[in-house]
Length: 224
Image: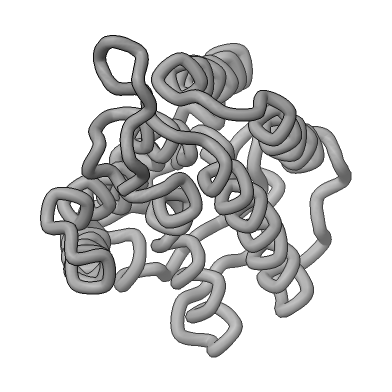
């Protein structure tokens, strides 16, 4: 899953007056993938290109015990929750951000072939929806659009900026699905992924700086 990971970020940003802003939640949504590609650059976690890995995605993610185990994801979630809670002096916001981090494992479980572990060693888990494009593609687009609409409905501000963010999400997802896949894994692929995450996070920060949550009764909530 790619842009579907940002659905919890949109939903969480609209959830509560104590929620962190959208840029922070976009970091949370892909934190374990930021870490994975960083560790892959260092040769610590590993992937390879295998056209037979799944019908949609030719990535064999064969060694990622630190970022994509449930225990590892929980450690990242706890660490990020503490950072947000201390940095923003917002314990509730920290818990919300941590939950968004942890959502990554669950969403990956839906789409990945069995390559996710509980604590870094077999057995591995994954429902494998990447082998069923007619299920995986509508699911990813649907949850993203639904969460985006929820965010717009629960906040006020310029509409153009969120639409730019949505266009970037859809464009990168289309590239992910339909562009030629790389012939091999390596630094270029990892840096490309990190760059894409950075662009989306910058756009989310821009959107979050210019929208406020709506209080019950129609008044804008003070930004958390």
